Image: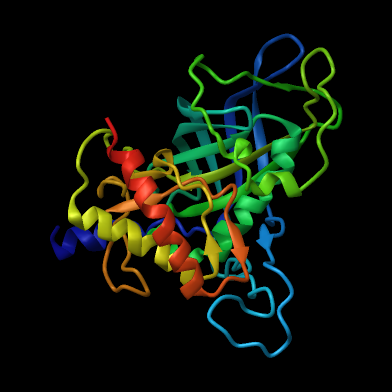
Length: 319
């Protein structure tokens, strides 16, 4: 690209400037007609935390820190930054489980339009209960802001709409194939600590009082199963988890489905250098739904990564 072409390119969309999204294809009214929903950007909830036992004040050791590490909060847009509304057309469904569906989206309009917008996806809660938990994942993306575009996809906001008058209901995800997610079945699942065993679901469709969405950068394809990973990809994957450890984050969900290639650039934005390892990774980690801020020291967390990594690599390369 010449310098003249670079000068002609609009600046990339700032991650904290999208304040409203309008999405069609996610809900229908009482007559079965598709409705377009306007969802406002909301502050994320509290990041999911795991405090590993009682540590005396002032303790300094290799395993735990005495207090929960400080959470990085969202950075509001500057007064001179425009507030952007995006009109999104729903595309193909990428993945689906009982809690969420992930869709490709196409930006049909941006107000104001003077930005370069990379390919995007939305993660949509499929139940009210899942919607109430989605802000925790949003909070984790905000906490690891410096690792967006490095380890994780860029995060453009958590968006929410209320449905107090029951004017619409969710459309069931298109397609019958479920992207199975075994996280809840794991003995150590963080979801088991959030609330008591739920009551049996009543007959009929579940209540629909809200719509909750995460807007994210579209990442690359999943790594092919049954093929040998390159040495560089293995090093990248290890160091990506180590970067999270430096921020006291346990991704928790060590599954092949959560490892992808970085976005192609263009049309995606170029990857950023790791602030810790000073190089650009060719992979990305996705799905921070179960990620936890932990009181483990980075060194202790890295040891746990080393325990999980062989199984993850085997999962990716297994026939």
